[in-house]
Image 1: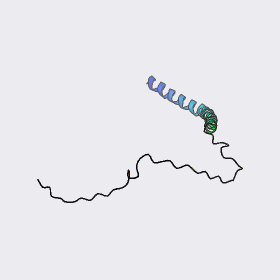
Image 2: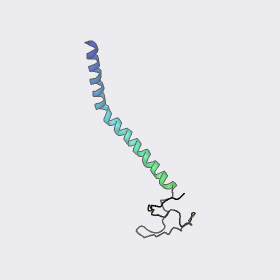
Image 3: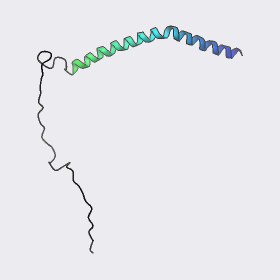
Image 4: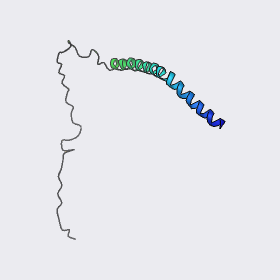
Length: 92
């Protein structure tokens, strides 16, 4: 009976401690993760050169045209071919 009461007391104590100190600790941890993520996101944004890449003022329309690449394979490769079954007699 003493072991059962000890286990119940420990569960109640742990539950009370988590309810009392859990939310502030979780908020602090999340705040740190968000700060780290936002600074990391800016580094990635700067790395790929998206910031300041388009010249001009905000609201201007910029059209960029990509060059067409040459085909490496022939024109007939990859085309759809419809096959039909035909009945032919094989002669030996």
